[in-house]
Image (spheres, rainbow, N blue to C red):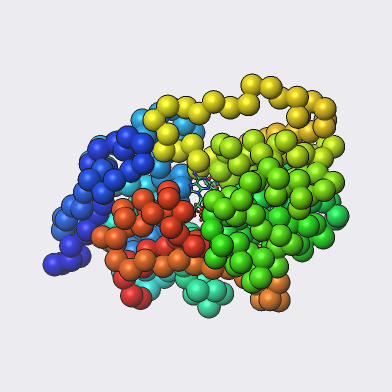
Amino acid sequence: MANATNRKITLAARPVGYPKESDFAMVEEPVADPGPGQVLIRTLWLSLDPYQRGRMSAAKSYATPVDIGGVITGGIVGRVEQSNNPKFKAGDFVEGWLGWQSWAISDGNDIRKVDPDLAPLQTALGILGMPGMTAYFGFLEIGLPRPGDTVVISAASGAVGQLVGQIARIMGCRAVGIAGGADKCAYIRDELGFDAAIDYKGEDVEAAIARHCPDGVDVYFDNVGGTITEAVLKNLAKFARVVICGQISQYNLDKPDLGPRNLRFLLVNQARMEGFLVFQFADRYEQGMKRIAGWIKDGRIKYREDVVDGLENAPKAFIGMMEGKNFGKLLVKVAEV
Ligand SMILES: NC(=O)c1ccc[n+]([C@@H]2O[C@H](COP(=O)([O-])OP(=O)(O)OC[C@H]3O[C@@H](n4cnc5c(N)ncnc54)[C@H](OP(=O)(O)O)[C@@H]3O)[C@@H](O)[C@H]2O)c1
């Protein structure tokens, strides 16, 4: 693309503990022309997600880490500016894992079209994207909720958590959210209709769960791990299902935390704990998206986004998310349509 510059954020150093701005670098290069079969995409929205912390680390995980000097992994929504691929044309909007950069080239296999008339474009990265699918399939398929169940959700005001609680209500369950701070708690209780909210920064979580869940916790949707999760596990109901979705309290630790060595709470409650990765449900995303879109249309599901302007602000916003500064799905607006 003549005269255009690609701005990309690369990994300058592997973070030790909490990431810092010096772990990232902004690199500029001319935008290349797409080759045969390729598509040139201008990024409009970038998604910031906790899993990206794992990609910055060399520790063994389910995906290969970003190399030092490599573009940080990330989902984007963009506009096709040039296409040599018959499946896409200039002006199409697409979503894909094209990284923290203002332009990208794709061979067309790692992107999907997004319909701008269906919902705001950026929802393809949030409520109708990966976090939405995580909440929907993780809760329904692993949590196996039944009407009347008491469901506890950690990181309850975040991209995944806010949706899990609302789906729990739709399924006839009681939803109890755990979040950091009075504002987030007021939001999930008063705006989203959770039955109760626990401020883990301001109250004794174990006592609050016992108070709000007198018959025990039937489903725990765990986004955080650590001491919050230990407090929930002490309050499980018989045949409880513990869904291990995320462990954000552990992502920035230098040394692994000590977990519970005594799993008696699972034994005596005949309970089950199961981890999942959203990709295992990839062949059913369309079904999940349709259902969530229907609930949004009917006014049964609300969603909150936290939008940061400018690609250059992505590192600071990402670091903030690791400290709970985001309030809702964290997105970077990279460019206007
Ligand atoms: N299994 C999968 O396939 C899958 C897919 C997507 C996401 N996830 C996981 O789901 C979780 C939520 O992701 P998201 O995208 O919805 O992020 P998010 O909840 O929108 O943002 C992260 C939130 O985590 C909370 N947090 C940060 N550090 C914490 C700590 N030490 N203890 C307790 N809470 C802490 C903060 O909220 P507070 O202010 O409330 O502390 C922060 O706002 C993450 O663990 C993520 O890795 C898993």
